[in-house]
Image 1 (cartoon, rainbow, N blue to C red):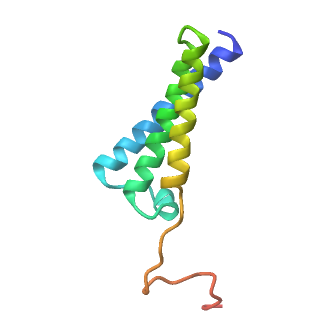
Image 2 (cartoon, one colour):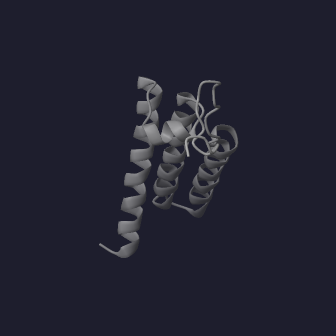
Length: 109
């Protein structure tokens, strides 16, 4: 298999993984700790990962569609999905509640 074939295969695997992670977060309403520190809520994190995964899969599938118009349309759709994910569901960090301690405030030293 050529290098480009491996690249497409890895891209498809990452796309499936991201989409599966997003669906899992949306269904279970739970997310990993690192993701929880980055996103405000589970819905935003799940949709962000789902949209990025679907965009990557659409881009990979578009490489194998016949005709240049199909590839261009799939590329445009993938870019649109990423744009929605970045603009609407981007990581913004958690809102701190009054009881949360900030380790950067200098206390405890």
